[in-house]
Image (cartoon, rainbow, N blue to C red):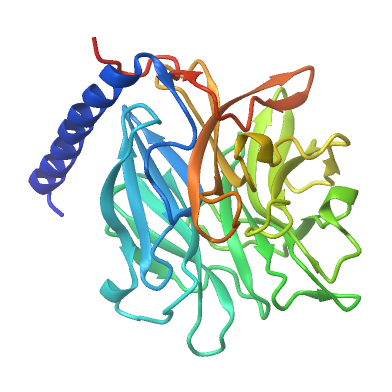
Length: 347
């Protein structure tokens, strides 16, 4: 895509957003309510903020790739089509289970981590694709990114203060067997600054261990890592339990190092179902800031039909903050919430 095409694409997207949000805001004033908009049949929402625009990547077209949605205000989103399409790749190595895309801007390029199922050995592979535009198209760079005989999912990049990249990911419970149980665990891998390839061996971060995570069950999950740093402390947010169950919830662990050791917060989970208000299975989150940068928000999915939890999920947006070293989330909410600070509103 040349500069003219790219500029035209973004201009049209912003124009459509302004038309859409003007209508939506005139009806709703200065409030929004979860779940966000009419987006369904997605999961694992990740939001990238670039300039005045937000890009949301989700598990969406599981047999082909990933859609990208664009917003100016975090609440109203335009479907901008496929950012990654396996049918446009030179090597069409996978044909299902395209899960959990995340995108980072690094060294003037956009890098997407994702997982999919390899047609050759039926394993879930964690991969890396690259693009010059957050809208895509993303083209495969490493398939896989992590060399592991076991299935790997849910890749998440964190760049430390000195610029060192760390990749967090989950060994999937499909074939990670511990003491006869299927267990998803979160690992950390130091990566090269030059080419985003692994350096050394990975470090185990967390495994299911707290009572709410059912650590004695045959199937157990710690997955969906997201790392952020506050006042010198690293916070590893994660999801536990089965994604298609109302038990799916979010907890966190802390460390003084990006590779641990990690200590889970003793009051986990910090975000869980509230079926009384119709919020089921909040999980697999990312974190971003309001348009003016003054507020922090968590983006996560819930089940579209709380009475019948499944892979059909919808995105949600709630405020989060730190207080005395504790991470707090004001959610899940289903009541009207104030617009993110600095969001564009109609008059």
